[in-house]
Length: 238
Image (cartoon, rainbow, N blue to C red; front, side):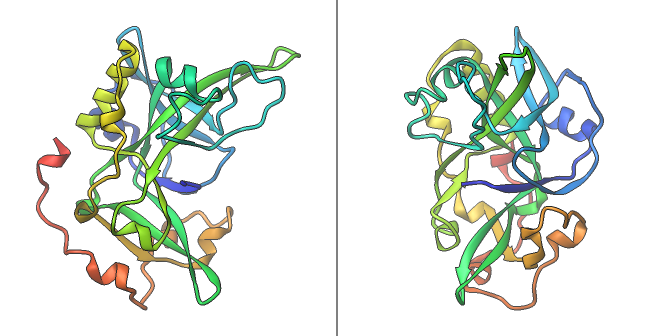
């Protein structure tokens, strides 16, 4: 799953990286984004790619009561009633700098900071919806797609978000608009192009939202030791 992430890039960087034509907001660094909060989302409609804010927790347009869903399994989203229409017609990207996942260590939950090597900007594949209450309130929502974790991250958690680079992200948006299958894009990101390290357990607190969230703990684990030193930017970014 994906239950926390960070987004510290400027709006200019996000727009340039993912070829966004318009934005409805400026972006402030956010180091510990939680479900139910408003998050920046890239959507594409009628050929126009825009950056807008949506609540993290998708509510199907047909739902009688709002029961937000923060994640959608990539393996079943195309068929599951809660996500089926959004998968076909309402795909999005959720810009991110990193995300957090929790492993059980010494009978306690230990958070890990996870990102692409070289601090390359990334985005999660997502789905969006618009839900209206009986009183007429409109809520714009989204969810993050997840897949089975890659070989490195399996020791932390069995699921991970679908991570997109600029190239695959643009394809994801275009295929969504065309209504074509994009299952080939919904794969675990290569383990050798990612890195992870343990961070403070304070990350579990929503109020803990500062650069300290990224600080590596001194104690190393097998997962961290296997991480290779950052290499020069390679073709997977293209």
